[in-house]
Image 1 (cartoon, rainbow, N blue to C red):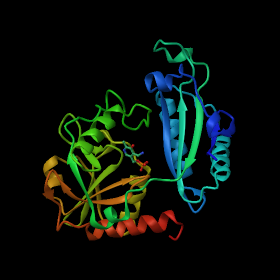
Image 2: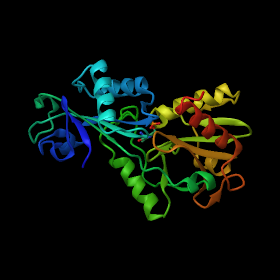
Image 3: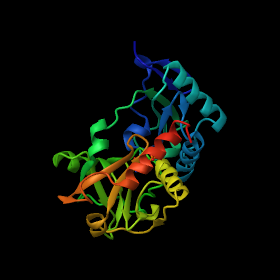
Image 4: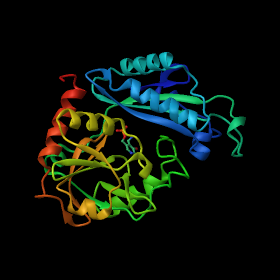
Length: 287
Ligand code: PMP
């Protein structure tokens, strides 16, 4: 038995969840999406995800074909239909069916679908020992070419970096912008710790305004840790005391090596561990 997929305005069987080859989401990557966690049966940070989705849609002049209340209800129904307790929801809005030309306005209606599934996490061992990464040679999309705040279906830039990571036998690659400042990892945001303070690249450097990033910044400040949003160079990554990534799927994961340089003492540091724990409690409603 397959999954129940929300497609358009109703739940359908996985086998019937099909979209047209003329959909501009497929032809041009013209669309927006969200990746959302479900913890204990609850859709995590629903409001923040909906806000980002509608803002992404507005920025590319794509009308989300449902208002927020109905969309929240569709999400809830999809989670329940799949009896999802802890998992991941992918909410996608494409430009819809059009012609072979670029013009998005020939597409009459956006196409919306929701997939609620189990989540493939990094192995637990990687959280304990920390992860190795490399610097990608692929430069992150210039923010003036495609604003990084838009969570669009156009992930080729990130995929090129991901290929570099895989070629180097590591799970993630750090992407820099054209000026050489750190932007983000291929699917996660970057944090460093130096002399007790946390440093985070600004969104303008070319990173998505991650929901997890926002929560972790808040949790760190609650702990009395100073958080500074500033441009970081490759050198800053090489000499920091701690380095970690945040994202919906990864949550908080320590980085212990980049380009062969060992970070700190080669294990996830105290601040990383504290924030991972605080995030876990927050996500599971214990704080
Ligand atoms: N950057 C990119 C490019 C991403 O795809 C993601 C994951 N959606 C993130 C950062 C992390 O964002 P969030 O915490 O909202 O998942």
